[in-house]
Image (cartoon, rainbow, N blue to C red; front, side):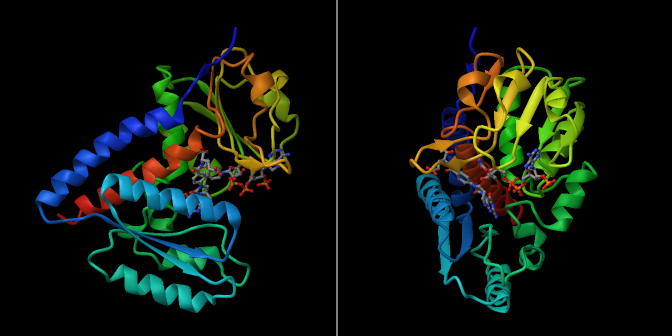
Length: 282
Ligand code: NAP
Ligand code: LUD
Protein backbone atom coordinates (compact mmCIF):
# COMPACT_ATOMS: atom_id res chain seq x y z
CA UNK A 1 0.00 0.00 0.00
CA UNK A 2 1.24 3.50 -0.62
CA UNK A 3 0.50 6.71 1.25
CA UNK A 4 -2.07 9.30 0.22
CA UNK A 5 -0.47 12.53 -0.95
CA UNK A 6 -1.40 15.71 0.91
CA UNK A 7 -1.25 18.12 -2.01
CA UNK A 8 -0.05 21.44 -0.61
CA UNK A 9 -0.36 23.21 -3.90
CA UNK A 10 -3.99 22.18 -4.28
CA UNK A 11 -4.98 23.05 -0.70
CA UNK A 12 -3.13 26.37 -1.03
CA UNK A 13 -5.11 27.09 -4.20
CA UNK A 14 -8.43 26.49 -2.42
CA UNK A 15 -7.44 28.71 0.51
CA UNK A 16 -6.27 31.43 -1.86
CA UNK A 17 -9.76 31.60 -3.37
CA UNK A 18 -11.19 32.26 0.10
CA UNK A 19 -8.51 34.89 0.78
CA UNK A 20 -9.29 36.59 -2.55
CA UNK A 21 -12.88 37.00 -1.42
CA UNK A 22 -11.75 38.59 1.85
CA UNK A 23 -9.52 40.99 -0.11
CA UNK A 24 -12.54 41.93 -2.24
CA UNK A 25 -14.61 42.73 0.87
CA UNK A 26 -11.79 44.87 2.27
CA UNK A 27 -11.53 46.77 -1.00
CA UNK A 28 -15.19 47.72 -0.67
CA UNK A 29 -14.13 49.44 2.55
CA UNK A 30 -11.27 51.14 0.66
CA UNK A 31 -8.63 49.00 2.34
CA UNK A 32 -5.99 47.29 0.22
CA UNK A 33 -3.99 44.83 2.33
CA UNK A 34 -0.28 45.68 2.14
CA UNK A 35 2.73 43.46 2.83
CA UNK A 36 6.35 44.54 3.10
CA UNK A 37 9.05 41.91 2.81
CA UNK A 38 12.63 42.81 3.70
CA UNK A 39 15.33 40.65 2.15
CA UNK A 40 18.90 41.32 3.25
CA UNK A 41 21.66 39.77 1.15
CA UNK A 42 21.62 37.42 -1.79
CA UNK A 43 20.86 33.95 -0.45
CA UNK A 44 19.57 32.12 -3.56
CA UNK A 45 16.87 30.11 -1.76
CA UNK A 46 15.56 33.25 -0.01
CA UNK A 47 15.33 34.99 -3.37
CA UNK A 48 13.09 32.22 -4.71
CA UNK A 49 10.88 32.26 -1.59
CA UNK A 50 10.51 36.04 -1.60
CA UNK A 51 9.70 36.03 -5.31
CA UNK A 52 7.00 33.43 -4.61
CA UNK A 53 5.58 35.70 -1.90
CA UNK A 54 5.45 38.63 -4.34
CA UNK A 55 3.69 36.45 -6.93
CA UNK A 56 1.10 35.31 -4.40
CA UNK A 57 0.40 38.93 -3.42
CA UNK A 58 -0.09 39.82 -7.06
CA UNK A 59 -2.46 36.90 -7.57
CA UNK A 60 -4.60 37.82 -4.55
CA UNK A 61 -4.72 41.60 -4.99
CA UNK A 62 -2.49 42.31 -1.99
CA UNK A 63 -0.18 45.31 -2.35
CA UNK A 64 3.40 44.17 -1.92
CA UNK A 65 6.56 46.14 -1.43
CA UNK A 66 9.81 44.21 -1.22
CA UNK A 67 12.99 45.85 0.06
CA UNK A 68 16.11 44.12 -1.27
CA UNK A 69 19.05 45.32 0.81
CA UNK A 70 22.74 44.54 0.25
CA UNK A 71 24.52 41.77 2.20
CA UNK A 72 26.53 44.28 4.25
CA UNK A 73 23.49 46.29 5.49
CA UNK A 74 23.81 47.22 9.18
CA UNK A 75 21.25 46.15 11.77
CA UNK A 76 20.42 49.78 12.62
CA UNK A 77 19.44 50.46 8.99
CA UNK A 78 17.06 47.50 8.94
CA UNK A 79 15.50 48.62 12.22
CA UNK A 80 15.15 52.15 10.83
CA UNK A 81 13.25 50.75 7.85
CA UNK A 82 11.05 48.59 10.09
CA UNK A 83 10.16 51.67 12.18
CA UNK A 84 9.04 53.51 9.05
CA UNK A 85 6.91 50.54 7.98
CA UNK A 86 5.46 50.21 11.50
CA UNK A 87 4.07 53.72 11.09
CA UNK A 88 2.94 53.36 7.46
CA UNK A 89 -0.87 52.93 7.41
CA UNK A 90 -0.76 51.29 3.97
CA UNK A 91 1.39 48.44 5.32
CA UNK A 92 -0.44 45.81 7.37
CA UNK A 93 2.27 43.14 7.43
CA UNK A 94 6.05 43.30 7.81
CA UNK A 95 8.39 40.35 7.41
CA UNK A 96 12.17 40.02 7.40
CA UNK A 97 13.14 36.93 5.43
CA UNK A 98 15.44 34.65 7.43
CA UNK A 99 18.31 33.90 7.60
CA UNK A 100 19.85 37.37 7.85
CA UNK A 101 23.60 38.09 7.44
CA UNK A 102 25.69 37.54 10.56
CA UNK A 103 26.11 41.22 11.53
CA UNK A 104 22.34 41.30 12.13
CA UNK A 105 20.71 39.76 15.20
CA UNK A 106 17.44 38.17 14.03
CA UNK A 107 15.85 38.58 17.49
CA UNK A 108 16.47 42.35 17.47
CA UNK A 109 14.86 42.60 14.03
CA UNK A 110 11.82 40.53 14.96
CA UNK A 111 11.28 42.52 18.15
CA UNK A 112 11.37 45.82 16.23
CA UNK A 113 8.22 44.87 14.31
CA UNK A 114 4.87 45.91 15.84
CA UNK A 115 3.19 42.69 17.00
CA UNK A 116 0.02 43.69 15.09
CA UNK A 117 2.07 43.77 11.85
CA UNK A 118 4.12 40.66 12.61
CA UNK A 119 2.61 38.46 9.91
CA UNK A 120 5.36 35.86 10.48
CA UNK A 121 4.00 35.33 14.00
CA UNK A 122 7.56 35.25 15.37
CA UNK A 123 7.47 38.26 17.73
CA UNK A 124 7.61 37.27 21.43
CA UNK A 125 4.14 38.79 21.92
CA UNK A 126 2.60 36.55 19.25
CA UNK A 127 4.65 33.51 20.34
CA UNK A 128 3.66 34.16 23.95
CA UNK A 129 0.01 34.46 23.01
CA UNK A 130 0.28 31.24 20.97
CA UNK A 131 1.69 29.31 23.93
CA UNK A 132 -1.00 30.70 26.22
CA UNK A 133 -3.74 29.64 23.77
CA UNK A 134 -4.75 33.22 23.01
CA UNK A 135 -5.68 34.72 19.67
CA UNK A 136 -2.58 35.76 17.73
CA UNK A 137 -0.91 35.97 14.33
CA UNK A 138 0.23 32.37 13.87
CA UNK A 139 3.61 31.41 12.38
CA UNK A 140 3.02 30.55 8.71
CA UNK A 141 4.79 27.21 8.27
CA UNK A 142 3.41 25.59 11.45
CA UNK A 143 -0.07 26.89 10.64
CA UNK A 144 0.26 25.40 7.15
CA UNK A 145 1.31 22.05 8.65
CA UNK A 146 -1.77 22.00 10.88
CA UNK A 147 -4.11 22.71 7.98
CA UNK A 148 -2.52 19.83 6.03
CA UNK A 149 -2.83 17.39 8.96
CA UNK A 150 -6.52 18.32 9.36
CA UNK A 151 -7.13 17.79 5.64
CA UNK A 152 -6.38 14.07 6.03
CA UNK A 153 -9.56 13.85 8.10
CA UNK A 154 -7.81 12.30 11.11
CA UNK A 155 -8.82 13.33 14.61
CA UNK A 156 -5.71 14.87 16.21
CA UNK A 157 -7.13 14.51 19.73
CA UNK A 158 -5.28 11.86 21.75
CA UNK A 159 -2.88 10.99 18.91
CA UNK A 160 0.82 10.69 19.52
CA UNK A 161 2.58 13.47 17.61
CA UNK A 162 6.35 13.59 17.22
CA UNK A 163 8.08 16.73 15.97
CA UNK A 164 11.69 16.41 14.85
CA UNK A 165 13.37 19.84 15.15
CA UNK A 166 12.89 22.62 17.72
CA UNK A 167 13.52 25.86 15.81
CA UNK A 168 11.55 28.98 16.69
CA UNK A 169 10.19 29.17 13.14
CA UNK A 170 8.90 25.57 12.83
CA UNK A 171 9.57 22.91 15.47
CA UNK A 172 8.60 24.78 18.64
CA UNK A 173 5.44 26.48 17.38
CA UNK A 174 4.11 23.39 15.55
CA UNK A 175 4.58 21.40 18.79
CA UNK A 176 2.50 23.97 20.66
CA UNK A 177 -0.22 23.89 17.99
CA UNK A 178 -0.40 20.09 18.12
CA UNK A 179 -0.66 20.28 21.91
CA UNK A 180 -3.45 22.85 21.55
CA UNK A 181 -5.31 20.27 19.43
CA UNK A 182 -4.93 17.73 22.24
CA UNK A 183 -2.23 15.55 20.72
CA UNK A 184 0.37 14.03 23.06
CA UNK A 185 3.51 15.71 21.80
CA UNK A 186 7.17 14.67 21.83
CA UNK A 187 9.77 17.13 20.55
CA UNK A 188 13.02 15.62 19.25
CA UNK A 189 16.30 17.35 18.37
CA UNK A 190 19.98 16.66 17.79
CA UNK A 191 20.52 15.44 21.38
CA UNK A 192 17.61 13.00 21.31
CA UNK A 193 18.67 9.44 22.16
CA UNK A 194 17.16 6.66 19.98
CA UNK A 195 15.41 9.03 17.60
CA UNK A 196 14.08 6.17 15.48
CA UNK A 197 12.32 4.66 18.49
CA UNK A 198 10.55 7.99 19.06
CA UNK A 199 9.58 8.54 15.43
CA UNK A 200 8.26 4.97 15.07
CA UNK A 201 5.69 5.70 17.77
CA UNK A 202 4.27 8.73 15.97
CA UNK A 203 0.74 8.76 14.57
CA UNK A 204 1.62 12.25 13.33
CA UNK A 205 5.25 12.95 12.40
CA UNK A 206 6.38 16.48 11.57
CA UNK A 207 9.96 16.75 10.34
CA UNK A 208 11.96 20.02 10.23
CA UNK A 209 15.66 19.20 10.57
CA UNK A 210 17.24 20.54 7.37
CA UNK A 211 18.92 17.26 6.36
CA UNK A 212 18.08 15.74 3.00
CA UNK A 213 16.02 12.50 3.14
CA UNK A 214 16.90 12.04 6.82
CA UNK A 215 13.77 10.10 7.84
CA UNK A 216 13.64 6.63 6.25
CA UNK A 217 10.75 4.19 5.93
CA UNK A 218 11.93 2.04 8.86
CA UNK A 219 11.64 5.07 11.19
CA UNK A 220 7.92 5.51 10.51
CA UNK A 221 4.84 3.83 12.01
CA UNK A 222 2.64 2.16 9.40
CA UNK A 223 -0.29 4.44 8.51
CA UNK A 224 1.24 7.58 10.09
CA UNK A 225 0.63 11.12 8.81
CA UNK A 226 4.04 12.47 7.76
CA UNK A 227 4.56 16.21 7.24
CA UNK A 228 7.88 17.00 5.56
CA UNK A 229 8.86 20.62 6.19
CA UNK A 230 12.41 20.29 4.90
CA UNK A 231 13.58 21.86 1.66
CA UNK A 232 17.07 20.85 0.53
CA UNK A 233 18.63 21.45 -2.85
CA UNK A 234 21.00 18.63 -3.78
CA UNK A 235 24.20 19.21 -5.80
CA UNK A 236 22.43 17.86 -8.89
CA UNK A 237 19.83 20.65 -8.51
CA UNK A 238 17.05 18.34 -7.30
CA UNK A 239 14.82 19.62 -4.48
CA UNK A 240 14.19 17.07 -1.70
CA UNK A 241 12.64 17.13 1.77
CA UNK A 242 13.91 15.89 5.12
CA UNK A 243 11.91 12.71 4.50
CA UNK A 244 12.99 9.96 2.11
CA UNK A 245 9.80 10.01 0.05
CA UNK A 246 10.60 6.77 -1.76
CA UNK A 247 10.79 4.54 1.34
CA UNK A 248 8.44 6.47 3.66
CA UNK A 249 5.55 6.69 1.17
CA UNK A 250 5.42 2.87 1.21
CA UNK A 251 4.83 2.84 5.00
CA UNK A 252 2.97 6.05 5.89
CA UNK A 253 -0.80 6.57 5.53
CA UNK A 254 -0.36 10.17 4.37
CA UNK A 255 2.65 12.17 3.24
CA UNK A 256 3.41 15.67 1.95
CA UNK A 257 5.58 15.98 -1.17
CA UNK A 258 8.56 18.31 -1.72
CA UNK A 259 8.16 20.52 -3.69
CA UNK A 260 4.41 21.17 -3.68
CA UNK A 261 3.86 20.39 0.01
CA UNK A 262 4.48 22.67 2.98
CA UNK A 263 6.20 25.40 0.87
CA UNK A 264 3.09 26.66 -0.94
CA UNK A 265 1.14 26.46 2.34
CA UNK A 266 3.68 28.71 4.09
CA UNK A 267 3.13 31.37 1.48
CA UNK A 268 -0.64 31.04 1.62
CA UNK A 269 -0.73 31.36 5.41
CA UNK A 270 1.34 34.54 5.04
CA UNK A 271 -1.30 35.93 2.69
CA UNK A 272 -3.94 34.86 5.23
CA UNK A 273 -2.14 36.69 8.05
CA UNK A 274 -1.69 39.83 5.96
CA UNK A 275 -5.42 39.95 5.23
CA UNK A 276 -6.21 39.25 8.87
CA UNK A 277 -3.90 42.08 10.00
CA UNK A 278 -5.63 44.40 7.51
CA UNK A 279 -9.10 43.32 8.70
CA UNK A 280 -8.17 44.13 12.28
CA UNK A 281 -7.63 47.77 11.32
CA UNK A 282 -11.32 48.08 10.30
P1 NAP B 1 17.02 24.76 12.01
O1 NAP B 1 16.78 26.06 12.69
O2 NAP B 1 18.33 24.47 11.41
O3 NAP B 1 16.67 23.62 13.06
C1 NAP B 1 16.90 22.29 12.79
C2 NAP B 1 16.45 21.46 13.96
O4 NAP B 1 16.72 20.09 13.64
C3 NAP B 1 17.20 21.76 15.26
O5 NAP B 1 16.30 21.79 16.34
C4 NAP B 1 18.19 20.61 15.39
O6 NAP B 1 18.46 20.22 16.72
C5 NAP B 1 17.43 19.50 14.70
N1 NAP B 1 18.34 18.48 14.18
C6 NAP B 1 19.43 18.66 13.39
N2 NAP B 1 20.05 17.48 13.16
C7 NAP B 1 19.33 16.55 13.82
C8 NAP B 1 19.47 15.16 13.98
N3 NAP B 1 20.49 14.49 13.42
N4 NAP B 1 18.56 14.51 14.71
C9 NAP B 1 17.54 15.16 15.29
N5 NAP B 1 17.34 16.49 15.16
C10 NAP B 1 18.25 17.17 14.45
O7 NAP B 1 15.97 24.52 10.87
P2 NAP B 1 14.48 25.10 10.52
O8 NAP B 1 14.57 26.54 10.26
O9 NAP B 1 13.49 24.58 11.48
O10 NAP B 1 14.27 24.36 9.11
C11 NAP B 1 14.31 22.96 8.96
C12 NAP B 1 14.10 22.60 7.50
O11 NAP B 1 12.84 23.07 7.09
C13 NAP B 1 15.10 23.22 6.52
O12 NAP B 1 15.29 22.31 5.45
C14 NAP B 1 14.38 24.45 6.02
O13 NAP B 1 14.81 24.84 4.74
C15 NAP B 1 12.97 23.94 5.97
N6 NAP B 1 11.92 24.97 6.11
C16 NAP B 1 10.91 24.90 5.22
C17 NAP B 1 9.83 25.75 5.32
C18 NAP B 1 8.69 25.60 4.38
O14 NAP B 1 7.89 26.48 4.27
N7 NAP B 1 8.56 24.49 3.71
C19 NAP B 1 9.81 26.72 6.34
C20 NAP B 1 10.88 26.78 7.24
C21 NAP B 1 11.93 25.88 7.11
P3 NAP B 1 19.21 21.20 17.78
O15 NAP B 1 18.19 22.19 18.20
O16 NAP B 1 19.61 20.28 18.88
O17 NAP B 1 20.36 21.80 17.05
N1 LUD C 1 11.87 33.63 7.02
C1 LUD C 1 10.48 31.98 6.02
N2 LUD C 1 12.83 31.79 5.92
C2 LUD C 1 12.78 30.48 5.31
N3 LUD C 1 8.56 26.29 -1.85
C3 LUD C 1 9.83 30.74 4.06
C4 LUD C 1 9.66 29.05 2.26
C5 LUD C 1 8.41 29.30 0.20
N4 LUD C 1 10.92 35.36 8.21
C6 LUD C 1 10.79 34.25 7.51
O1 LUD C 1 9.12 31.61 3.57
O2 LUD C 1 8.19 32.13 6.41
C7 LUD C 1 9.34 32.61 6.56
N5 LUD C 1 9.54 33.75 7.27
N6 LUD C 1 10.43 30.85 5.25
N7 LUD C 1 10.15 29.54 3.50
C8 LUD C 1 11.12 28.86 4.31
C9 LUD C 1 11.42 29.80 5.45
C10 LUD C 1 11.74 32.49 6.31
C11 LUD C 1 10.03 27.80 1.83
C12 LUD C 1 9.58 27.31 0.61
C13 LUD C 1 8.77 28.06 -0.21
C14 LUD C 1 8.83 29.80 1.41
C15 LUD C 1 8.30 27.54 -1.54
O3 LUD C 1 7.73 28.28 -2.31
C16 LUD C 1 8.23 25.65 -3.10
C17 LUD C 1 7.65 24.28 -2.78
O4 LUD C 1 8.02 23.72 -1.73
O5 LUD C 1 6.89 23.79 -3.62
C18 LUD C 1 9.46 25.39 -3.96
C19 LUD C 1 10.43 26.51 -3.97
C20 LUD C 1 11.67 26.21 -4.83
O6 LUD C 1 12.80 26.28 -4.30
O7 LUD C 1 11.50 25.93 -6.01
